[in-house]
Amino acid sequence: MQRNIQCNTSSPATSDTVRKFSVHKLSPAQSLFTPGYIFGKLSSSQMNNSRLQYFIQTDLQTRESGTKFTSKRSDNGHEVWGAWETRLEGYGRILYPGISKAKELALDALSNGGAFADFGIGGGGHWMDFFEQASLDPQKVNFFGTALTNTFDPRLNSENIFLCDVARIPEHLNANSLDLALSNFGMHDQELIGIEAALHLLKRGGEAIITAQGHISYDVLIPNITKFCKLIAYSLPTDRSSFWGVHLRKH
Picture 1 (cartoon, rainbow, N blue to C red):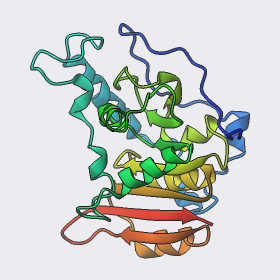
Picture 2 (spheres, rainbow, N blue to C red):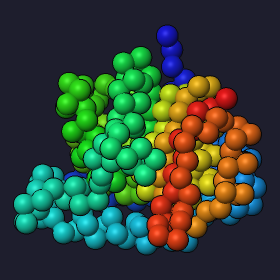
Picture 3 (tube, one colour):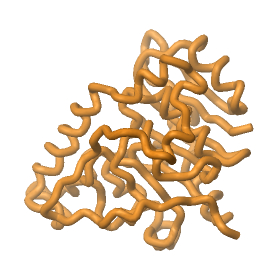
């Protein structure tokens, strides 16, 4: 059965070239996605986030800590891209303490030949661990992700890792094409428009687990998203923690 997936055909990054996300005009594909369709100006104003440059620079500084990006390990013996990643078992941990819910959903998607994405893959080495444990070839699965620079594990299929922020992933994937969308603190102050993008890309019945940090209120988040999806679980910031998260299933 043909899947509604549109792959990026850009060439893989070379070890001598650092590529990074840059803001550009909306493509025809992006125009089908309307920023603000759930949260209004609160999300559409996140399209061009000035703090993204900070996160880009952090990625580049991490890369420069290694001798060469082609080398698996830096001088101190640690993987360069492993400096900023969370094992898949930790995804959604504020919603499901002690339960690897995101890993369970990823395995379900793969077993059914589905497609899934990680919005903000970090170093990506944790995905290589996941594929190796599941005896899967990362070049052959329908796994997609976003990164602000090409400082991710080069063993991943770079054609399916898009150098963009989460607001622009609809440029690269068609609407209703994903079975699962994940993000573990990877949306970089674009969480509202990231939720909109995730619901735009998910098939009916597709699920998303998104965790983030920062101020968000019940009145902004819950009444708006429940018009478009079933809310399976959620956690809001408290006086003791700024972490929050949602687990959604698209209507």
